[in-house]
Image 1 (spheres, protein in one colour):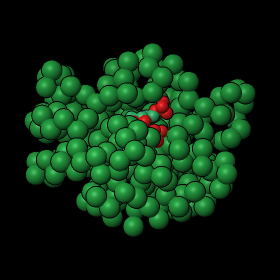
Image 2 (tube, protein in one colour):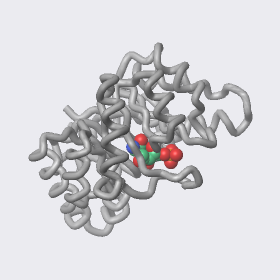
Image 3 (tube, helix red, strand yellow):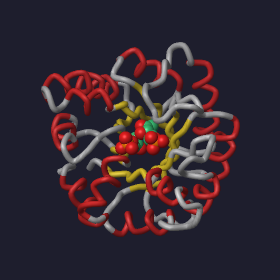
Image 4 (cartoon, rainbow, N blue to C red):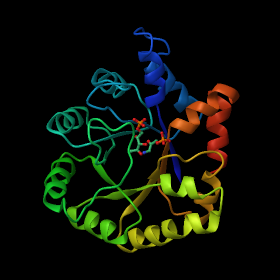
Length: 237
Ligand SMILES: CC(=O)[C@@H](O)[C@H](O)COP(=O)(O)O
Ligand SMILES: NCC(=O)COP(=O)(O)O
């Protein structure tokens, strides 16, 4: 079964636009779970432009499904994750000024850093995932660093999909096979949508989890949150 983790960053973006508590991020997360989400993902960024540190603490005791925290492993991020102890932490190589994640790790260059950080999370009993491109050497070094899983950065797939789905998926199938051979679990995310998700799943059915935010929350404006989550779940069958 491929799990759907709903990324609620964009719900916090909307909340922050007015400075109040509408929409309430915790309520939306709990509703996502009620509507069928298998997990909740947040990506607290240093400027707290969407998810705030306080949201992460508020969510932890109330969620009933898997909690995945993504982010760059700065000392502050590591401290937050070790205190909150989510089910999974996903390491992303973002600089503080980035608009959104736009690449996977260079796991070879950063092997010492990643090994040290992953060791801290593994010791704390938190499942670890490393955000990577489809470059198979990067996946091999993620395994060497001690990751439990890799998350494939799917923006290049989403961009190439409308023109030629077969060409778009090919490097992802190869990367997924390499990850499986290395004994790594497999996640995927970024720009997955109702348009491209089912084809991705059909080609890589051993995928453990997808985390989806931007397109899913946008679709919910038209379809409502409950129907949207059901439609995304239908893409994973
Ligand atoms: C790690 C990743 O793929 C990102 O998609 C991220 O979690 C989304 O972050 P923003 O919501 O800040 O664009
Ligand atoms: N890890 C990817 C994620 O959580 C959501 O990415 P997106 O759907 O907002 O592009």
